[in-house]
Image 1 (cartoon, rainbow, N blue to C red):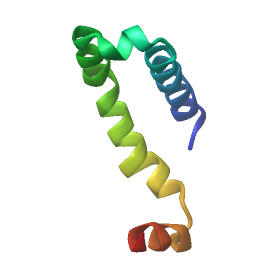
Image 2 (image 1 turned 30 degrees about the vertical axis):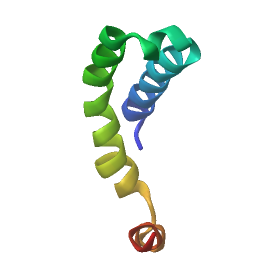
Image 3 (image 1 turned 120 degrees about the horizontal axis):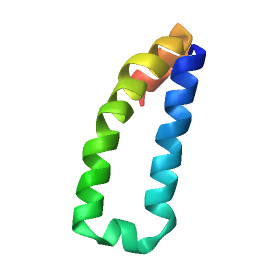
Length: 66
């Protein structure tokens, strides 16, 4: 993962921390929907592209088995 991706991941984690830190955020439908729309594309890219490609082949195989 390069430095730009690390910064993107940090910013994503900040948004998610803000969202989950206060119960009123995730119980508010509008805030929950807005957060999901903003964060899901980044979550998807990090999960299936960036982080996946950084894993050693053995770790990828283990995750595929689970």
